[in-house]
Image 1 (cartoon, rainbow, N blue to C red):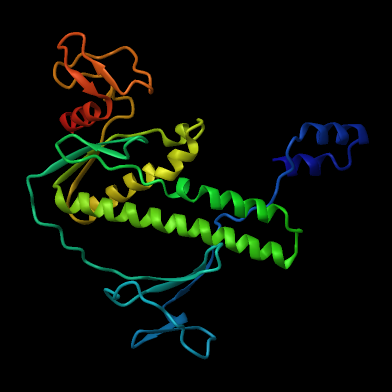
Image 2 (tube, rainbow, N blue to C red):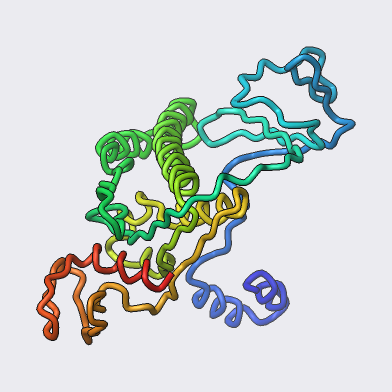
Length: 287
């Protein structure tokens, strides 16, 4: 929109053009849609023989370290490179996934920062794995070193790669933890009940870095598609469901419950509630 306005004012009087530039607080910049660079090839663009992958116009096959055996004949391949300089190959295959055995177990959880996931039953709560917080001192040091390098120099590119590799290490550890947790919950339970959070709104608060490190949205996304894969039931409570300030024993609802209050007593039943445990129990009952 700013570009079209600037083009229309090119032939206008000079004072109007200067007025427009004063109103444009931020000049638009061209950006890539994704941080990773990638390209895709269809079936006639690659060859797969005896575990070796050869792409079009390449004389020798790629040295690939396979993460798993291919379930079928791939229909396309995508080669990508992340900011850390690592190359990945993704092959698209069609596979029939068998549903897990039926079980009578259900689980409900409440997400948080003091405890990552609190369950409604007697299962122990999962402590928050602070992947970025534990590496924050190294991130700050490498970011400071990057800012001191001259733009366009080889030393700046080396410093950028070092910082990118550290961020990739943090992201890989977080993905590994979330995949293992979501797979375990789907495998062991017939139904999984969780809460629906406005994560975009929470990312505008002073807790944004901790919430981003916890990656609640990625866990909920993985639970949703894995439940569909393996024939499980996945349900999320309504976003405005007052799970924390409603007594699970008698149904009394508080008018307000600040985030700093971790325990509260029901004025009608006299039951002492742990904030997260009470919320998980209400989510279980609603589910």
